[in-house]
Image (cartoon, one colour):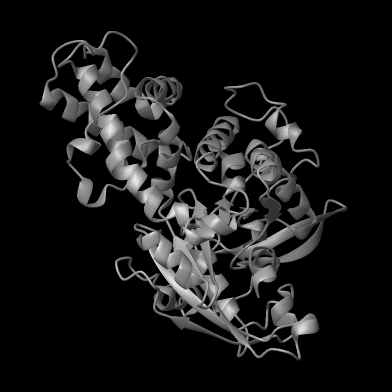
Length: 457
């Protein structure tokens, strides 16, 4: 009855947009949320958000989020980190958090003179990228997950220690807890190493960020090769714990947070995956397909709304760190993003959800310039290197106009691209970027906000 009463109450209260921000580790979720909120509060850099450009947003302010059991997104400290005298990138997301931004909006069109301003709430929900990986497990059996996980591990040097330990195990032998704990520990170590090497499909995600579940049976299992699994065997116990992990960890997370999302942002660091090579890009493609298969997309019916149920009716697929490329290549980056998640976009479109792919930078950390080198003009980006603090201007390489030249032209399993080389530098945020009335500098964050929120403001 709680969901029903919540839905009925919602008919007579201020409308709420529940925006989920998802993406894998290092995709820039924390920076995206911080800059989005700052630019919604101070809208001088948001001409692409029509309600802001037309002056219909009379005020925007922060309020306590409605869920008292979820930590608040630490907006103020993150903004200070990004825009202070000694700017630095904030810590990555390590737990679910929320933030509510409320707007007083003056209606437009024919209603402008008939009704007064209304209140609209925006609830932004941030999730650890590592936990998102687990959504793809919901549709997999233990055997299917093990086969796929071991196939990936077989071609990744980071898994060598686990492969050696697994060779000494007998899956059909009686379950031995110290042996299983050693396998789980070795698998977790492999996942951490693979993540550091740029691979995205690292499951189970809670092995990377266990929190208070560390050492529990639900996080003490590992993939095993196919074969007999008699009662009481190592294989049977791994299967039991895998199913418990889905039932007791993944599904509650999904129900508590994902099932109530109205709008969704999917952030992807495409440039880093391209820089890492074909294997990393293919791994990213596979991981995102698994995550997005868990979204309930389409339009929410009136009855479902009364029952407190939601469907994602808009999804923005955003390739982050567009400021690492000259603007002349942004369309190519967006096209690559769209092609990378093509199957998920088509599935969402079929159910009635609207999708859009774009390249953006939530916080711009470079400037553009052109230089003549050996008689040829080159478009460059200039910024401060994160590692050394040195100022550099570089041309990271040209993305192809046709995404298939990257996605389909290199043989599966090839360590490098057949044609082209793509460099990625890590830039530090720039000091002194805030001005009165303006949020932090960005690229297309206003257009992203218009797609996600414009029809509700």
